[in-house]
Amino acid sequence: MKIIVEKSDAEKSMIRDAIATNILFKACSDEELDELVEVFAPSEASAGSTIIKEGDEGDGFFFMERGTVDVYEGDTHKVTLYSGVTFGEIALLYGCPRSATLRARYFCKLWSISRTAFRAITSDFKRRRMD
Image (cartoon, rainbow, N blue to C red; front, top):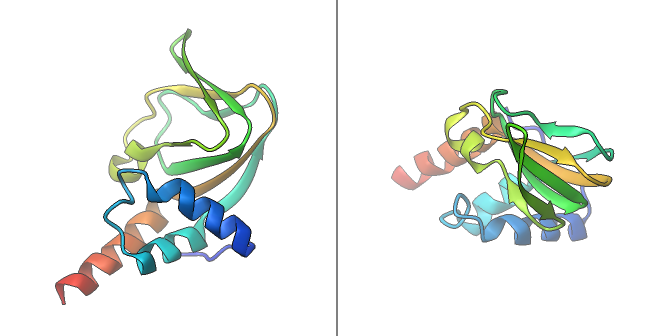
């Protein structure tokens, strides 16, 4: 299901710039990218909160506008992510369990798209291209 989320032109541009270089979105047309950006929804994560929990069902892709996130596999710290990164690609494609836990080190401003919305939009454009 596709729910359009109001956002400023600056926010749209920022999200578009962040996702356009991601492998999942590289093949998208400009029109398709515009529609995808429309459904990204904002959220926030306070310091210490869990954004993604290892083993949970993967159902969304994120762009981190602002913040710092630590990535853990089990109890092992793997990497730290900073403002401007995207994560959760595998969830958009396969909906498989999350492979890591992501915990906010500092306050985070996030934008996300659900697997359902992503697949609805990309399937629609794929159908249009085939017609």
